[in-house]
Image 1 (cartoon, rainbow, N blue to C red):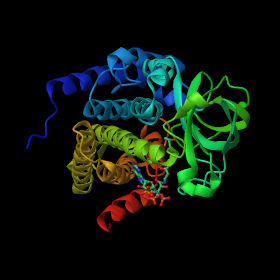
Image 2: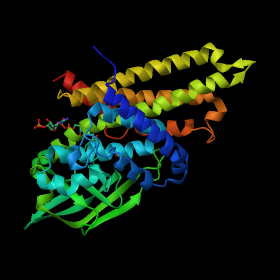
Image 3: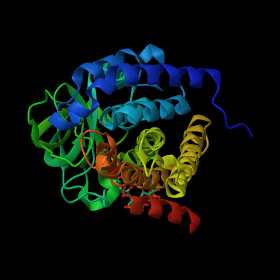
Image 4: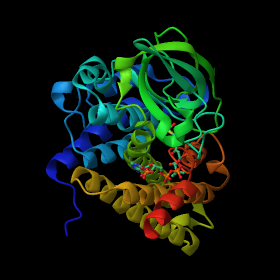
Length: 379
Ligand code: CAA
């Protein structure tokens, strides 16, 4: 069994780390403070092939494998988790389902711009009354001639802003329950597409989570993704891959907090010696390193399962469950090592802690991941 990355994956890590250190490190604290969406650096990520990493080159993507993708999200999130989620949603939740379920016309029309970062992709599943219970869609789509007329609203939609393409879910046949949900590709220029309030959040403050409102929005029938009634399965299959992205984001945040703690422990002196000489700090560091290594193995394993055509629903859920738990624990203990300084904005630790928390919530809470894993064990 070989746990090492191949040469190409190592080269991708090096390239992405250099990009993140050079371009994202100088603005990460600032966009957290101002909540400003970093359009210029996201555009550069598109130019590097990071916004559609596993999309073939001829369709505007990076033509890379799923492990390289996980490594890249890890490296971006090690420096800035806001860029991490922006990238993860565009890749996993929008480019991937278009590639998997889209027609050739849909791929040409939408995927090329999304994969190259010219447009930003959003995934509209969550509603005020449909969070964990994603099947409870209140948004409806009624067929009228060559269009579907969509009415409803979505909340917490990452990348839900201007210049975008969104995959949204709506009920085409309420009587059929979750088998009556369909998926649609919509553009922000469609009449009746309204960007509502933008969330003010605890973390990932440089990313956008918006309310989207659809007021009798006419969507061409040709923009249906998959067949009528396929929507819920498309959403679930898409989230399987998305969870690997969020697990990699959690891993990157934990890695950043660990590296900062290791450095600080060697520099900070109390009682006449570096705090790294005290066993309490040594144990913190040892546990952090072990946790992160275990999380990394689960994340890369899930990515490798996807890359090599194995089932990855459960391995993705395990990776997200474990890595998000590690991210919260490691960032909390990293603040503990930094003491009062860790609680201030002079250090990035409090940002890491705030950013880590969301990884236990979005793309399925930790409780949802436990449902998915236990559902498989008990089937
Ligand atoms: N792949 C394909 N199909 C799947 C599937 C998967 N992984 N999981 C379930 N399905 C299918 C099932 O086979 C079943 O179909 P059949 O009846 O034909 O067999 C159907 O879907 C229903 O399955 P369940 O009975 O398991 O569905 P459920 O209603 O009990 O829901 C759930 C299960 C796990 C709770 C699911 O609703 C869920 O994952 N909820 C969380 C939603 C979520 O993750 N939201 C994230 C929003 S996006 C986001 O957060 C993005 C962001 O901002 C970063």
